Length: 412
Image (cartoon, rainbow, N blue to C red; front, side, top):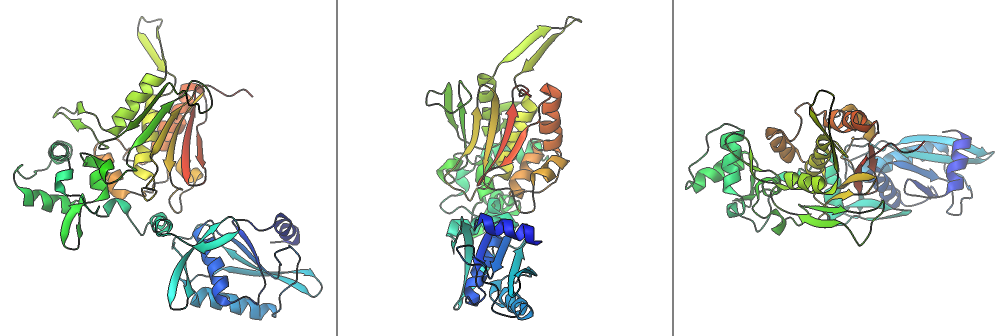
């Protein structure tokens, strides 16, 4: 960091990625600030800068300040961290210590020591505070250390799984033998061994993934398991929507032995809603063949919906996936930030990472998900370019990820 960059940071003041501190604060407090920044998107702690943006400078010799910072990061953080340390002379006799913390640490959640306890810290604006249970669980999931879809769902039982779909999956999709219908113990063994059920204090109950994929009524136990779909007449949200539905049920369809859909899952229901809400142009080409063109390529829409089901953050328990259709665009809104290490650029390049590995693998068995992991670059990005020459928007917006498809090219 050079002086011009430091001047700009100080001028802009504290924010979610910048904290001003003196170097005489308690080690526990410095550790809390480090943990909070590591748990968000990294950032800088400027030692020797006051809250009013004046520079007071380090009170310790720079080398001693460095030793102190590294000791705090090693002893008062769990897991221990190694921040990047540098100093910059603001003016003769005034030196600023710069503690830089990376944005892509894979070891979340970070905890700061408080007495004999370790407390997970989060950053909200310029404030650092203790994480709620839900926020802490979300951090575990972002790091990949918690697979939410393999967690048991208390209160549920094997009776909450749709046996028809399970038979369909094992017999017709996976092409493997499955227990007889009356063999309850055989079914439980199979479902536990495939993570569709999980042990909870020695008792097998459905996992979150099992209910999401095959539950008769998943939303009874997982209220966040559906899709809220709305079609608007114009380019903005409006109370007078053309259609508004809440899509509930298992994710996957019930198929015939020939592979035809006998009973839809929420993926097919979402596509049906899209077909009702957009238009299709049809014409006879020069060769006498009928040609059709929807407002959006349905394969791209399907990929966006499937990705939201496979990759959304299910620890956000009060929010459905959103499917919103406007006069000029279609949006699929997935609750949660991108999983740890995933960026929009990596998605466009076909980077393979999953927040809900079990759900993704079962959707892949049904061929909802491309085996190569190239669904985003091939079906969404290239699909839209081939359809109407538009680039889809892939945006992380706070605690949600939005795939936005444009009906037509935007004016230059």
